Image (cartoon, rainbow, N blue to C red):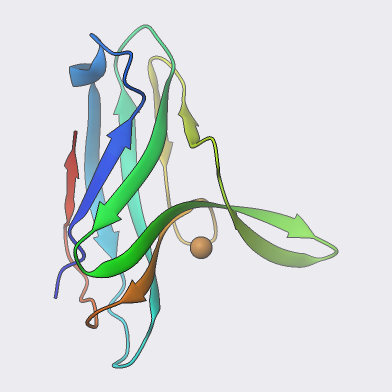
Length: 119
Ligand SMILES: [Cu+2]
């Protein structure tokens, strides 16, 4: 099933419609998998910086935005409590090996799919 994700940005925004999400996808997961990574591209065409604050999915108990950092030679992921900065007039790509959306507590295996909606 698709991991239908809703991504939320900072609420200040008359500029909000200038933020576009594209190329959202997940890897297919094996049966019984409880977590999956999600990837997408966020383009901010506005003149103010924005933040990707949260995401949600009907196919996962919880969705977090994770960063990847190198710690003692090991790649470690952790939730970004304040969201992910999206600079003005800039593009941020979440991709394997880097920052990503983490689906936790999958209720069904995901298949690779285009899945996102902005709000
Ligand atoms: Cu993660």
